[in-house]
Image (tube, rainbow, N blue to C red):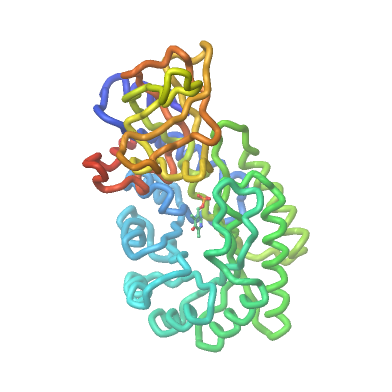
Length: 377
Ligand SMILES: *Cc1c(COP(=O)(O)O)cnc(C)c1O
């Protein structure tokens, strides 16, 4: 949603070209909503969603911890004021020399999902805490992260046993139910798997202490999504169901849910045209597309709300595309996007819910277009 602060900023500054404007007040409200909904969980903001220094500094000052995927992201979190104890290296795919660098920076919490990765951590970050990621089916998520990360629960038992044998601290289990997850029962299925890993290792005398429940908390695009409170309740019931009165420490890693609704992209209509005289869809070309930061429109997965100066009037389905000379740079075509008949070349439109996964997905200079500019206010 474009807040009044964002609208005022755009009206006063009139930035040229497409840009993202992020309202820090909304990020603060989101952080506080997570704290309230999940009072017993530590919050590790997933830096990749939007690593703007102003956002990281705000979250660090509010007490957030940070989930990072590279040495550069670790350094961003530390520069923002987080202590090393508040940073996890949560990528399961790391070079051993990056693990060593993270260890030098004081990081002692690492994600793994196989024996090979455990061996790197044991060599380069001796004695650290490790958690093993288990696969989820990604069912119910609009942007699933399944398959690439995690192992089956039975293998997680082997991985964590091996970690303990190599002198690491077998700390717990993690999962990610898939991004933009609107099915509250997804956490229940994953927590059931996690509890089985806990039980199997307990039988061998290894006591795990932590479940990292990942991200996946949705932001509102075109459809309503359950509020943070509903997620909190579903997660708490699932923890009770699977861990009884021995609920472990828990971590959540919201990315999209922390910043998605805090940002709005201002864009301009460059061209509106048809492909033939009797074509019944108009092609609307914006000055931002897949390569300018809207990569999550891949397979039309994420459908952003678009506000135009003509809303309320009659609409017709349009194909929406970006400005670059790549035919993949089409945002919505299989499911055309309804836009006002009176929309014209030169109109400014606002693409809402774009605070997450936009600036960092923008290409460097494809066709000479500069990366997405961002203002954090
Ligand atoms: C991307 C990612 C997140 C954030 O996911 P969202 O769906 O944006 O909340 C959290 N944890 C890990 C390990 C990730 O890779």
